[in-house]
Length: 485
Image 1 (cartoon, rainbow, N blue to C red):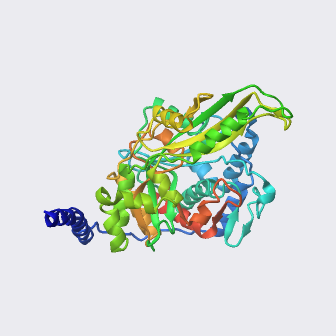
Image 2 (image 1 turned 90 degrees about the horizontal axis):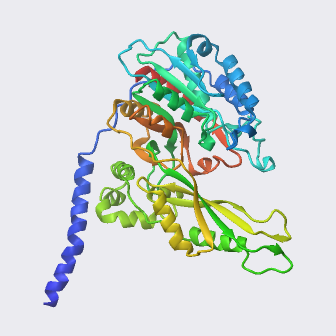
Image 3 (image 1 turned 120 degrees about the horizontal axis):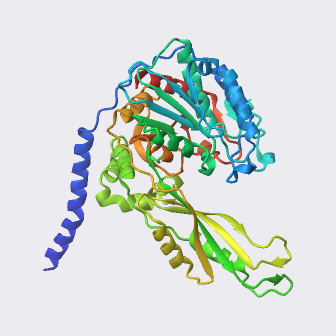
């Protein structure tokens, strides 16, 4: 009887692993053939001119604010006047639409009216620079040093805006006319998910019953060092983005003078609750886009990792355990949270009666407000604290990876970045693309730039920068896409 139990246990362990190994071998031996990279048809590209234009764009302090009355709208006007000078052919030959207060919308008519138009998107606004003294180069200097253009918005997303306009200007100078009509939409408040930018553009186009073959906005990059053991860059095309909820925690308790405290104070109670939230993680879950990502990586990585990635039905726990300290991968597997704001007393010697904190949640598809409130309530377990959802950006929809638009983007990546593995994935941040899901079933998120973790960490941080090589490649990317899509 003991031997039967032992052999049964062996079979239970060995059989699934054997199936996984055989399945991996079969998938890799009959794996998808790489997309054939066509030769990019690039007309004259003046990288120095593109660098100069990006420098100029960075120097305008187009900082968006939640309160529109606090925005320096004249900075947007100055940026747009500069763009008109930088790109005279775009402003002479393309139709320009006025939608909203500070948005830029251009329309380039194609030769074949039977084709649905496509849209390229970026945004003009930037986040505040923080303490300028912490920057190596002043945040709005646009300095060029060490092969980079430095400054707030250089990567997010004036580099992308300039690259799009640079590519279109070059094609116009060459006398090129695209087959399909192309729209270019540059909103003014992406960083605050506000009502004046892409949201207003999309609403206007919905009212006009316009539909687009595909929309391409900022998003995934050509990532270096995405996973240990993977030596090739990975070009990640976002086909969905995580939801975004801001949760406010409030505690009301008698205050008074700090010389006679009754601890814990309202702020202390809030701080303890925030600590309990931050010391917990929501359960990992493999969504369809993330499964697709690991499936693609499994076709290209070494065999041991491939066995894991191609058989998540058996080894999902291995990925969760081994990648728990990889911030990018962990964010793909969970609804994440971060405490971002707190408020107590306005002076140091008074105990606040009302204290608050804000926690930002980035939601996996399918996660609801009710889920968040229930999870937080169980974690803090404190009736002295009230919970309120302050804002909810709404859920994103998964876009089709079998569409012609996705294939065109993938083929363009292969042409410009031939060494990269191209895959669909889920955006962990929010973009204007969410609003454009109203006008297209195929909304994609990709920024043509090779980035490592160190440079990605500069986004919304000090010393944001965009390499000159990346800028040149990005211009080539948009030229190729417009010529071939």
